[in-house]
Amino acid sequence: MTDLLALRGLTKAYPGVVANDDVSLAIAPGEIHALLGENGAGKSTLVKMIYGLVKPDAGQMEMQGSTFTPSDPRAARGAGVGMVFQHFSLFDALSVAENIALGMETPPPMRTLAARILEVSDTYGLPLSPDRTVGDLSAGERQRVEIIRCLLQDPKLLIMDEPTSVLTPQEVDILFETLRKLSAEGTAILYISHKLEEIRALCDAATILRGGKVVGTCMPRNTSARDMAELMVGSTLTTPKASSHSTGDVALAVTGLSAASPSAFGMALRDVTFDVHVGEVLGIGGVAGNGQDELLAVLSGELAAGPGMVAFQGRDMHGIGPEARRGLGVLSAPEERLGHAAAPNMSLTENAMLTGAAREGLARRGLLDWAKTRAFAQRIISEFDVRTPGPENAARSLSGGNLQKFVIGREVLQKPDVLVVNQPTWGVDAAAAASIRQALLDLAAGGAAVVVISQDLDELMEISDRFAALNEGQLSAPRPTAGLDVEQIGLMLGGAHGMEVAHV
Image (cartoon, rainbow, N blue to C red; front, side):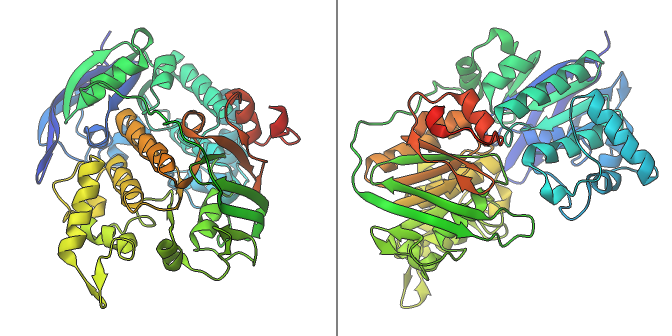
C-alpha cells in the first residue's frame, strides 16, 4: 500500500536550536499515528511543516506518492490536510455555523451549511447545533466545532494536537469513537498527546522524537506507557510521591463566595464554600468554562469578592489586591500562560520580576536589581529544567510546556503559604508533569496550602488529599480523594445534576 504521507529527512533550524533534525516517518491511509516527545522535542515544528505554516530547510514530503510542498495552510487544506489545534480559533459572539463558514475557502449558503453541519455531526456522533452561540458552548462542544469544520473539507489526513486536554472521560470516549470511524473510512490521523494511556488505547503506531530527532518507533498497544515515556525523555521516569505529613490549621477559607464573571461568556460563581489546611493539596476538578478562571481570579485578588468571602490565616481578604496578597504569601498561576501568567515579548528575567519582585527582594528603593532578578530567573530555569538558551530569551520563544515549567517554578520557588494553580501540567510531557506534581507535593509537605484546579482527573487523583467538583459555578463539598471513582466523577463534572459527591 502506498503511504498517504511520507516525510524524508526533514530538517528545520532556528537561531540557537535545531528543531527538527533529519526526521523521517510515514503514515498509511486510515492509520492513527501518534507523534510523541517531551516539550521542545520538535513535534510542533514538524506538524507546522506538514500544515504549511513553516518551510523545511532540508528534506522532502510526499502526499500519495507526489511531492508535497504546501506554501501555506490553504495549500495544505487543498491537498487534504486538516488540523485541529490545541488552542481553539473561534469567535465567541458568532454562531457555530458562522464560525465554520469563516474557516472555509468557499462556504455554501448558510442554510445549506447548517444542513451539512447537522449531517456530519450525526454521521460522526458529534452532536452540535449550527445555531448555538459559541460563547455558550462547553470546551468539548467547541472542539466539535473545530473537528466538524475540518471534516466538511473531507480531509485525507487529520492532525490533532492535544485533543483531550479539555474533555471529560465521557467526551474522550465520544471523540475516540469518531476518530475510529474516520480511520475505518480511510482518513489518516496524526495524533499528538502527552496522555500515554490514551495513545495505547487509540493509536496503531507511534514515532518518538527527542531533541528534534527520531529516537524510536513502537506499536503503542504492545508498549507500556512507562516505556514510551522513558523513550521520550531518555532516562528512567520517577513517579511523584507524597511524603507523610500531617495537615494543620486552615490557611485559606472561602465562605459563600458568589461573584459575576468579567467576561460576557464567563461563568458566575455561586455560593462556593471550601477551606484548605496547612500541608494539604485540595483538588478542584471541572470541565473548562465552569468557573475555574473566575475562582482563581477571586483567590488571586484580580476579581473582587464581597466581605467575609475569602480569608487567609483568619484575615479577610476583601479589598486586598494581587500584589498585596503576594506579599502576604498568597500566590497563583493562571491557566493562560502566554499573556496572563507571562508577558510574551518580555524576557524570562523580566517575567521573573513581574511576580517575584516583592517576595524575592528584587527591587530596592524603587530600583530593580537586575543581577538578582537574572539569578532568580536562572534558578527557575535550572531547578525546573526549562529548555531555553538563557534567561534573556523572550517568553514567547519557549514551547508551551517549557513556559509552563517556568511559570510554575517561578511561584513555587517563592515559597508561598498558599498557592492556587489552574491546569499546572497542561500541555507538558510525562517527565515534566511528574516534576511539577512532585514540586506541588513537596510544597505542601513543607507547610503550604495548595489548591490545584485541573481538568486532568488522573492528576487530581494522584496528588490531592481532598477533591471537589466545579460545575456551572457551583462547588461540591470537598471530600477525601481516596476511594473516589473516576468514572462517576467524570459524569458529575459533565453536569450530571443531582449526583451528590458524598454518594460517589
